[in-house]
Image (cartoon, rainbow, N blue to C red; front, side, top):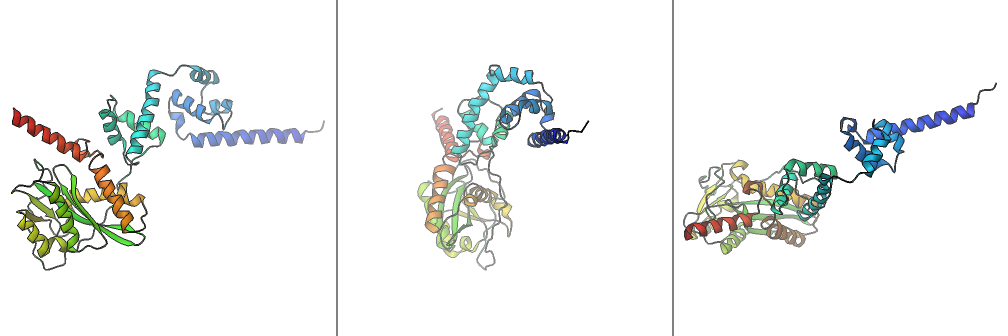
Length: 332
């Protein structure tokens, strides 16, 4: 009797095909055998167009009848809620310009009236591949090699004043465009972390920081106890800048030499700006960069972005809440 090599080869090819499928299933479902049956059923349902259900069930060590019962069953209330939450989370993430991670998404859901734990939000985001923007390492250069007078550090890393217009913090950063660098100077009120003054220019002369200061002064009513804190950059130590502070009755404060931690709040803002906007955008020139940065500050950062230090409300919301508390105290 002659051996049927043709049939044997066909059988071997079939076995090889099955083995390749099994390997591919295990590769795509890395670690899924450690999960419960429901997770494995969901994986089978997602991959049934790519692999035979019989092979999927065998590799994942579940019965076909169990899979079919799960497939044909009515979705649980928890599953229905998850589907609704997926839509809400995707909308919130999109509205945040793709920047929010689970803590801020969780805060936004709570503000919308959803009673949900942060772990559940994190799980759904992981399942849907939704991630926030992670901070990038931030590098800053300050021209402190000058012979201009230096002010003492009046803040000493006390970044939580009890009311607005007690401590303003200022700094400059570099922004790349295709046509060259542009420079952003900001002034933040440390009470609310709100950007109250800013200026964008194609230079970093003293006029840049004076414009940011002038914008801040144009929007706030200040008293006699306001501190303006910055690093030792030549723009902030210049005669014109210090003269303007003195004319307005503002006390001047400066960080220790080369110590970014003394102005950590503004450093943190710049890191956030670069993470959420600058590193994701390619601007042609100053005009494009200016419009985009101003829109980010005014429309998103000050008004909408939830700040972890403020209990996950925006800077403007935080200030409004404080103003209401003051009014209530005066009326009492």
